[in-house]
Length: 347
Image 1: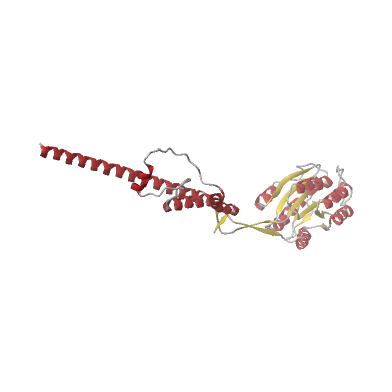
Image 2: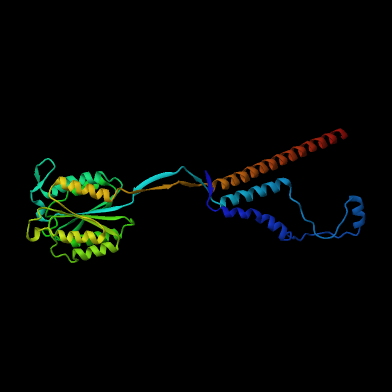
C-alpha cells in the first residue's frame, strides 16, 4: 500500500486558488501609439474600446497543464512511500548472565555424572549448561569466569553456539586459584547496566566461599537488587569441606534472598540438572515479537512524470515550429515560382 509521510502538504493544493482570489493580477506596462484618427480606426475595426487594464485569460490547455504541474509537485512534497508486508522478528526479552567459578578446586574429580562416572566439577557444569542453554533459545546469554578476578568470557549474545564454544574453551586456573565471586557479581552488574533489557537474571556457580573480594558478596547483592538483577546461587561440592573450599551456603542464601532469587546446593549432575529445571520454571523463557514494514520512498515518481510531460510538450512544440517554418518556406518558394512564371508570360 501507499502512504504519505507528510500528508499535511496536501493543504498546499489550495494555495493557487487563494493567490487567485486574494492577490491582484500582475500589471505590465505596454507601449502604445497615439493616432489622430482613433475614432475612425474604431469604426473600421469594429472593436469597442474600454478603459482600464486588460486581464489576459489562459487557454484551457494551459490551465490543465499548470494544475497538473502543481498537483504533481504537492504529491512529491507529501513524500509518498510504498509500505511492504509486515516483517516479524523475535528477540529475547531477558538477559541471562552465567558466572562460573574456575578456581583450582573446580578441577577436583569428585563430581558424579548422570551415568555414575566421576568427572571434574567444571566438566559437569559444562554438560548441564549445554542442555540448559539449548532449552532457552530466546534468551541473550553472557558468561563470566572468576577466580582471583572476574573476566568476561562471552558478552550478551543470542548466538548460543558461540556461547557454548567459549564455555568449552574455559579451563580451570586460567583466572587464578582463589574465589572472588563478590567481584564477579559486581562485573555482572556493570554489564547489565549497559543492557536495555528489563528482565535481568544472574546465575552463579561456585564451589567455595568468597576470598577477599573488593565488594563483599552481600553488598554486591544489595546493589544488584537496586539495579533490578535477580541472583540464583548454586553451591557445588561437599558441604563438609573446610578452609577456602568450604561452601558458605548462608552467604549464598542471603544474596539470593536480597535479590528475590533462590539458592541451591548440588553434589552431582542429576541435582544440578534438577536445579536448572527449577530455575527455568521460575524464569520461563520470554521473548518479544517486533513487527515492522519496509518503506520505499516514491517521491521521485511524480517528479519524473512532471519532467517527462514538459519534455514531451517541449519536443512537440519544437517539431510543430519546425513544421510551420518548413510550410512557410515551401509557400514562399511556390510564390516565387508563380511570380517568375508571370514575368515570363508578360515577356
